[in-house]
Image 1: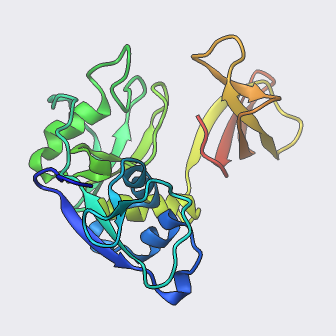
Image 2: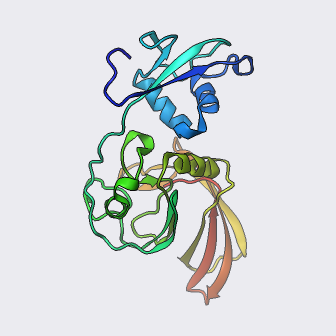
Image 3: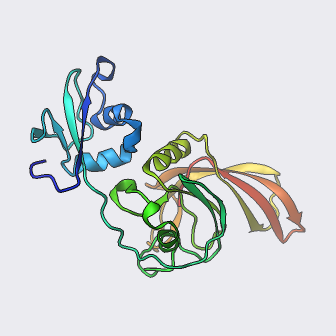
Length: 250
């Protein structure tokens, strides 16, 4: 942590008795001032970058998020100034359902990509948000960009919540994590299931032969659970179903 960059903010955290033997990332996340807007995942990244020191600034760098803390220890967290966004701001029309100083609710159309990526360098929701919000965006996740809290696939339409401040980003992320904020999808599927409702459970990972696709896999992957129910049947050809995701997977 020697020679910190201009604009770096130092935050000192003292470990209390109640946090004895906790992981470093967990302890910092619980003790960090709310105004700092640092999520546990962001703190893990800062730890990995060598931006957390034990003792005074310039002290021993701790780069292991699983380090077990002790009461009375003081950690210095060096939060760098937000980096400029790489994506360009583009004047792309947005359908805004709700907006205040902290967040936006966008009705994303089918065909719009959320984040710039290979094959889609611009024309994305992020490009549109950079133009719409301008300087009102804060440094969410260490990058001056819109706070995309959750995603929708390119060909999926629907409402998306976007954080405009670090505090809103941290709060919304926590709500998604503890399931107090949920997502409901509607889909039209081929055929007519015999039951009126059910669950789809399995591990989702990269397709074994097509790495650009995701699939239900027998080895590896991450557990996924979707609960569904029939809303309308269209003969034997198709069915309108409602799906609720217990786990968010691509």
